[in-house]
Length: 241
Image (cartoon, rainbow, N blue to C red):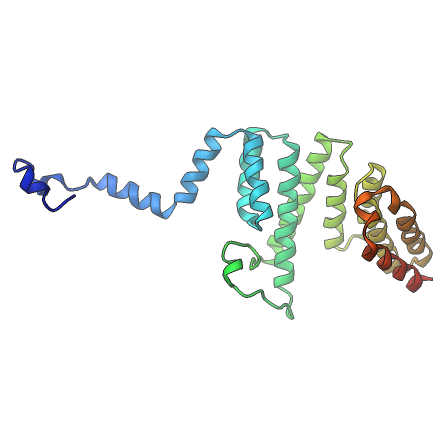
């Protein structure tokens, strides 16, 4: 209030016009939890697709925990939203993976510089929490696969989860299902399967997968123009023979 207000309005008693305690409380709550308030407003007024779009933006900005909240908000509005189910599963896997890396005894922690202030690269969960995240991802990927049975992404995601959990057989099975559904990452998937087979001691099976990766590569534009990928596969073949 301007200092000269009382002089210009002699009938106005400033002492009787103190801010309401409720107003002060609302201001404090608003300042302390503005992001929560903003998210609640968005959830109330945006569609599932719009909430999913917010989740995608946060994911691209490495705001994984925020992306998770938007995905869950989208799913509250539309439980069978394929995009939100898939991204939520990917978020669970990403958070668990980051935590697993940070929990390694020899892990080099990323410095909390300016680029990390708004990121989630310093997440650390307990082993139980990491396992729970991966279990949730399995369920979410499976739900997504039921919603869109012809989409390869849930199977590719499941394969990654099984790899993290050390289940090579299930990882191989899911990778192959993704290939059957014409995953655009098929050449790379053949390499992943080859690596898993090689780790199992199946050199001939691994070699067949590496060779298949080279054979199908021309059918996938994103790999056709990648000499680095081709050289890597060729090196794997040489090392496996």
